[in-house]
Length: 328
Ligand code: ISE
Image (tube, rainbow, N blue to C red; front, side):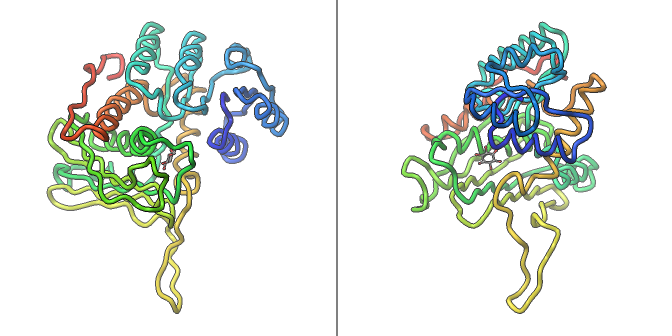
């Protein structure tokens, strides 16, 4: 594992407790003290560089959990070494960098890159997709999404509302609807006073697919009360909504309530477990699983338009190359 920060350590915990077939044998981090600490705790090797880690013959596959802007060189080194790589989202912060990864992967002739878009593995989103795919409700027309975080850290920059937060809905909706987005715009409602000055919070990202399905995503990252993910798919003959996040409902003298989760690890624990389990099982069978480098690229293209729409008025086109046959 490269970059075992909070996300990486949560993956390590899952791999070493509930997931079968994998073990973290080596870690590396730009923060070497962190690499040493994590390695000591889990009894693995700490490397001074990602390149040394990737070259270790005991390493069958690599997880990259560092920050988006530093993913590209490590993903390229994994491709060069012919090792499957699971890279946390975003694959790269710009579409150009993802294009370079796709071209290296295609030259190698084998899909090695999986992007960590975990919502595709969430049981409720999967049910929503199978209902839509069954055709019983007719065609999808609109999807209303909300992505709320209680707060965000001070390093969260204004563009991250799109390329770090809404990117989850961008990927999940591409997968759910099975089409690409072609247009984006952003609405900027009244700002909450409980935000860092540099943020537009909340905002609404409005996207349109090739066939005209309209997806709106409320991003509200200082909502204070919880990690709240909502999604309602509106089709021709009915709607499908994610239920409240916990199956347990409490009733007492005050009324009826569901406990609210406070972060993504809690809310999507099951999705993360399935995602990493499927990846590890796929690696041992020599098969690619999960989102591809193409999905990372396509999400980056939509993010580019969304980030631009934060500063430019009006509807902006999403531009992307045609999907290469390699990623069909
Ligand atoms: C964070 O990086 C995530 O991936 C979370 O799921 C998201 O809710 C949060 O806004 C992001 O910053």
